[in-house]
Length: 233
Image (cartoon, rainbow, N blue to C red):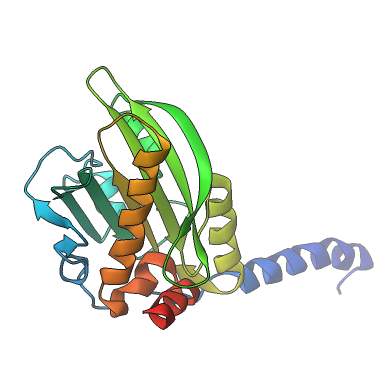
């Protein structure tokens, strides 16, 4: 016979188990689908064109490394122009954002290879359409060079502007019943940090989004902002 004491003790456990079950994600959100980023991102963006280079700072992607498990697709390119600063671009896409596998923000990647982050701030990047893109500007330096950096991350349809927001938005996705995919888009150059330098990075970002194959835009900025960019085209 079930005693009243056992019932009182068991009810909180049942409630906790029910809550955990309710919050367990059962679906996946994949905004990239079968699209290949290498083909979706154009080789010519405005006045910039791709040039072969090994100067781009990249996470270790050797088989078995954490980066290899984090990212399903990566694109790294150097774009040069006769009239603009060269731009190093890295796009990393991961189909699963979980407690074990989460996008690594540049503050972590650059520090891991010997850079110091000397400046960091949130920004709103003008893009085609009425909305703006939440992003971050950094300055990373080592003994050899200084890189002004512009980057943003996407978790599902969210665009977290900080590591804290990234964790909260991952939890929000899980609470809504799905495991989200994610992307990191990083643009940088080698130059003295200045308003003009960051303005160039922002201009490249807007031109890249305007030039990208529309089917890949949601994977870069989420569906709501992608719709606004497409509507302004």
